[in-house]
Length: 249
View (cartoon, rainbow, N blue to C red):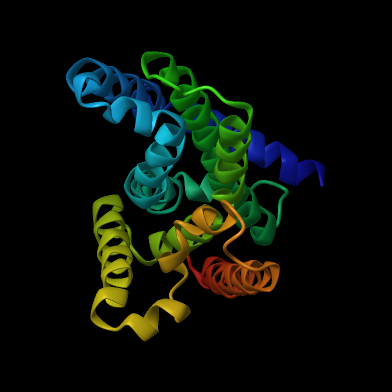
């Protein structure tokens, strides 16, 4: 267990040293601030700001979970697997007294921790950005926003594990990112072409948090989606672990 936690700390340290990490976290903070300021100054005369106020964190969550966070997880996973393989630093990790299963687990856990940090930062930034908007602060609105951001972690964990699997197929980080985006984009668009296919696509549930808002969805429906996402996570994780165990670095 100590080797696992030590390697998680090592992965998080490497992530923090990347310059793009700071730029991404800064963007997560500044984007809702800029968006809220724009609404408050341009559309206040139309009364839209009063409508958007309490829903603003959820609007930003939709942007975060659909586009920004998946793309960033793809890039981070590519750096963690393809990038280290190309730089031949993966061999240094493999000679340490730690099993391959724990190395893979530490990298996946680090991706999920990054998703948690991003979601927490996005929620806090969008909540504080509500100071620019009218009727943005209410106890129920704050609770709904916090719950939605917490629930959103489940589909984002699936995205992270998927990225960890695909990133191992290539030596080039750029190629791994492009393929991740292509597969993700195709599966996101598939329900528009084949609506029945959305039931079997884990990426169709990036807005799963919306099902938790209000009382419109039954508990059994929420539970069945959770079990589906959990099953996808386990299958993809085991496939990634098998690939990591077999690959020669």
